[in-house]
Amino acid sequence: MSALAAAALAVVALLHLLFLVLEMFLWTKPFGRRVFGLSREEAESSAKLAMNQGLYNGFLAAGLVWGLLAGDAGFSVRVFFLVCVVVAGLFGAATAKRSILWVQGLPGAVALALVFLAHARAAGPSERSSPATRIGARRGDRSASRGGRESSSRRPRPP
Image (cartoon, rainbow, N blue to C red; front, top):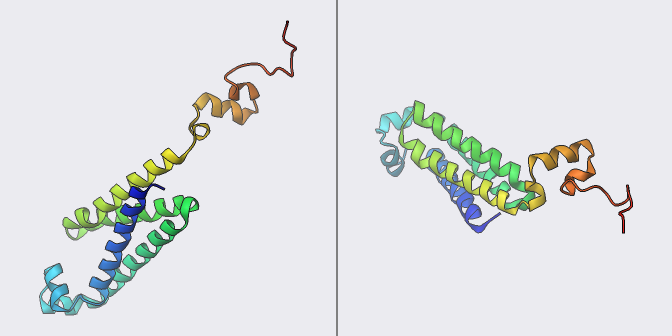
């Protein structure tokens, strides 16, 4: 994974740790109420829901850190948790507050794009072969992997 993709993934994980702290521990405090624009009464009445939401954000952060630490084997983990972040951002923007799209969804989408780009660059030319080569290889056609040339073991070449 590229350093840029890793940095973007780390930023998204840190954002979700921040969301966890805000929603689980600071929701009813003056700072938390200011961040979310809540009155004391609104914060008190929704505190349990916010703690639950914060816990889910913590799970997202944990999954993102797992994907970051897993190295090359963590590609599918990174993709899964970043897709979860993007979906949560889209849903939050549609149902709660539009700014969630920019604060949660956009960083997740950027990190997801960078993770895919890093993965595509890391894939060697053989993994990015043409469809004809892949089809021939699936059928067991060895000539497809040699650019259509016949094998020298089948027919001797004339001198």
